[in-house]
Structures are given as C-alpha cells and as structure tokens.
Image 1: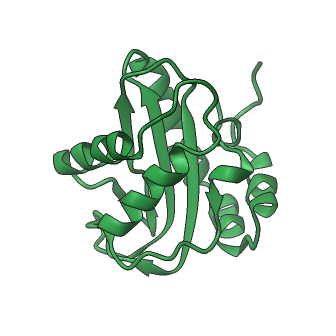
Image 2: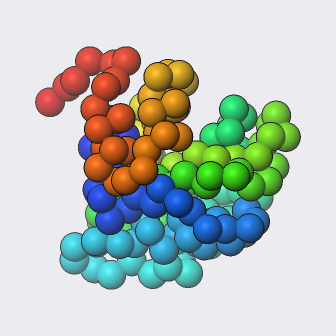
Amino acid sequence: MQLIDLLDEERICVDLQAASKDEALRKVAERLVRGFEGEKLNIDTVESALRAREELGSTGAGSGIALPHGRIYGDFPVRAAFFHHRRGIPFDSIDEQPVTLIIGLLSPDGAPAEHLRALASISRALRTPEITKALRESESAQAVLHALRWSPEPQSN
C-alpha cells in the first residue's frame, strides 16, 4: 500500500487556505469524504475522529509535515487527502515548526492493521527528500500524483 494508491485528484489541494490547525482539520475532513462511493461519510464524524486523535498528541511529525488520521465506523477502503499550505500553519508539531504538507488518512475502525500499514507507507514516502521537495513544488493535483509515482519502496500487487 502506497500513498498514491490512497489518493485521487478530488482529495488533493495544492493551495490550502487555512489560518489554524482547527481550520485545517475541518478542511481535511471535508476532502476525505469527497468521491465516496456507497454509504455517505459524514464530515462531522470524520472531523471528530481527527480531533480525537489530535487530543492524544499532535500528528505534526516535524519537518513541516502533519499526518492527521482517524478511524470511523463503516465499510470503505482506506483513503487519504493531500494538502499543501504555502506559508505554513502552526500545528503543535514536535519541532514547533509550521506545517506546509498535510496528509490526512481515514480508515474503517475494523481495519486497524491496514490503518497502521498506510501510516507507515506515508511516513516512509515523506522521509524521502526528493518526494517532499517535489510535493512542495507541485502546482496541480496531477503534479502531486506524478511526484508520488517515485517511491523508495518496491511496487506490490
């Protein structure tokens, strides 16, 4: 499982307009429910799950990256949303630096192993300087997807 497998163009925002962590979390929730086939996901439920996880400790991972994530009831595939904030926003990150890249992750509560695999895959990709540089330079959803096609881990079926 790789980040590119969890995204689609609808859930990519290359110019996030948010002044705070709270506002960013709302926008992450809004994007995570986009393009959902089948049972409609509720934005408020998704936002609550993201906030509940933040209460355990900030998902601001340092180096300008945040990985807000949550699990909710439902039967749906693990999905991600990508955001680039050009100036950076405070996110209570471990290094106290503003966040410019935000990758939100949503998983069904019945799939904790898939959730952890997705988080690990996202973390590996974002530890690759070439990928984070390309993501920060991306001007479109297509450019984000192109940047993610290069991966430090082997492709698996």
